[in-house]
Amino acid sequence: MDRRNFIAGLTALGASGLATAGHAQGADELARIDAYLNAMRSAQGTFVQFNSDGSSSQGEYWIKKPGLMKFEYADPHPHVIVADGTWVAVVDRASNDEPHQYPISQTPLNLILRDRIDLLNSGAVQRVVKSGSRTTLMAVDPNERDTGSLELVFDENPLALREWVTINPQGQRTTVRLNSMQQNVELPRRMFSIQAEARR
Image 1: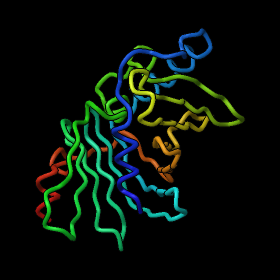
Image 2 (image 1 turned 135 degrees about the vertical axis):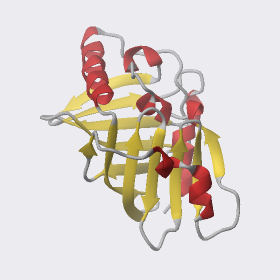
Image 3 (image 1 turned 60 degrees about the vertical axis):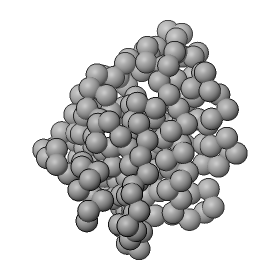
């Protein structure tokens, strides 16, 4: 499992000005996706991560807006990725080292974990591509185009976030596929504590 690529993808993008998705059809799609993401206040389920070297791992995830997220990997991987509203941290439960932390405001998680989402005006989205029963948003920081890119993939009928793909500057792709999702569930704030995860 490549946690570095997962986090590198998260930190590759900022949330600055809109690129090229401002045409009418793209704007309509972004408005529809905004409405879906804003209606989702929390979610939990299972995921599979596919790495560029062909390896994979799996686990459970929890999301609560604004700003909270946890991805817990199943054995034999002792890692947890936690966002506490300010920071995103990688916790290695098999190590006594301090967690690696990154400001959530400097990751694309800020686009989907903020209290109110406005993809059309928040920046980063370059293209909206519809293919069969899927819609894909392609995003890159317009001020840092060499740092990597992000794809958000949604199923249609009904609209549902299905996966995201991070592509680093070397072209390596890391895909996180959400296998299941239960929305608007009650999740306690304390489960998103970086300090608590580091002590476990």
